[in-house]
Amino acid sequence: MKRILLSVGVASALILAGCGGGGDTKEAESKKAEDAKSAAAPATAVDDANAATLTGKVSFAGEKPAMKNIDMSANPACARAHTGGPQKSEEVVVNDNGTVRYAFVWVKAGVPDRQWPAAAAPVELDQEGCIYKPHVIGVMTNQDIKIVNSDPTNHNIHPLPKANQEWNESQPPKGDSKLKRFAREEIMIPVKCNVHPWMRSYIGVVGHPFFAVTGADGSFNIKGLPPGKYTLQVWHEKLGTKDVEVEVGAKESKTVDFELKS
Ligand SMILES: [Cu+2]
Image 1: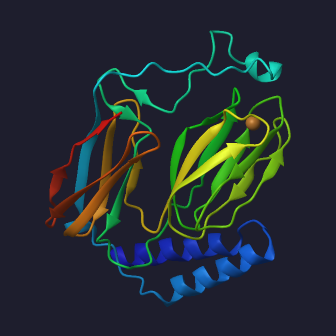
Image 2 (image 1 turned 90 degrees about the vertical axis):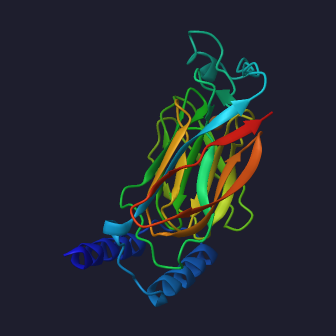
């Protein structure tokens, strides 16, 4: 039964890969190579019955930094979106419970080399009030990112990857959304906007589904891991990275807490 379900998952992932949006020739070639690699890899069934879980939180140590105001006065269409006062920079967001928001937690090493099925739904990255929402996202390799412009103004999305193909496209006010994907694992890809210098987001691209972005409670929950030894990493744009070695047995749930300092 489980095997049947997985086959369906893989099939739909392949269908999705087949009907992805255009892109230039280089991108198409690299996608072809990745698809070939995926097809060659054995599609091992995810053993849900024995899967382990890693949960925890990312705490902030030290004095809580003041959040900087973003000056949008040069762009009235952006400034008008913030009637309740200036937008705060999301570089370092410390939650009320002393945890860190927008930390990226992922299994850096130890995950078996398999064809992991990506979630069929794209991950959305919106531009609203002239900031990227959310500030940090995670996707699997070749999973769609749906880029939306909810603003009544132009944006120009410009990811700056090192391992993936760079691109740079404008999006008109409330224009059609764009579907984009990255073929290779990369932690992290900064995204800027060529129109608004303060706009910044980060995309984590991982070759497996074992990653999470911390939210308003600073916690993460990574499910479905095969039993094994792993390196779990937390990444934060200003507070750096930390690695922890962790071993999980079948059906085990382990807590790993991180602490980041400014
Ligand atoms: Cu912009």
